[in-house]
Amino acid sequence: MDNDIEEILFDQASIHEAAHRLGQQITKEYTDSRPIVLSVLKGAYLWTADLLREVELQVELEFIKISSYHGGVESTNEISLVTDIHSNVKNRDVIILEDIVDTGQSLQFMKELLQERGANSIKVATLLDKKEGRKVDIKADYVGFDVRNEFVVGYGLDYKELYRNLPYVGILKPQIYEQ
Ligand code: 5GP
Ligand code: MG
Ligand code: MG
Image (cartoon, rainbow, N blue to C red; front, side):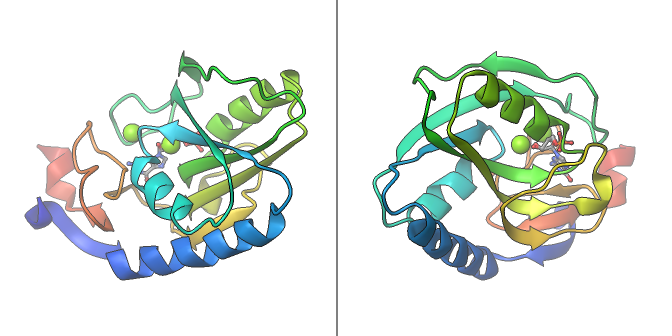
């Protein structure tokens, strides 16, 4: 697997530091609220595990699955809800956990869904923010790292469902796409 990687952008230690930094921030900002943490599958699975262990608060964990990317490296405009949550978000504070915000369309879809259901507040904690990729005007509230406009894999992020278990975030060698 490592042989397929051209460059490591964020290693395990720096991701851990980011999780610690954002975890402390969230701990301070949600002291009296018992938020619902909404982890977006599959990409956010490791980020959720690492970030939440740095949050020293009572939280409720939920998972949502949406589809946007269809296995390739290009984003699509069609977002659909694959697996919904079961808890009631009405009047609750929700923190969405994302692996990466690119066009912002997934986030917009989820924010609208939660707003329609009466959430009290909605914030977003993303490991990576690809600001240059934005197609809709939306911002993440907590950002681990800004990332340039390149396709990245690892630490939850896939290429054709592979590489999610790499412990770091990196860029694939071009010949992997060209195969
Ligand atoms: P959006 O374009 O809606 O902001 O992002 C949709 C989803 O596309 C992200 O949550 C992520 O799963 C995937 N995505 C966006 N950019 C990348 C990337 O550089 N690498 C990988 N593996 N997935 C990405
Ligand atoms: Mg995602
Ligand atoms: Mg994907």
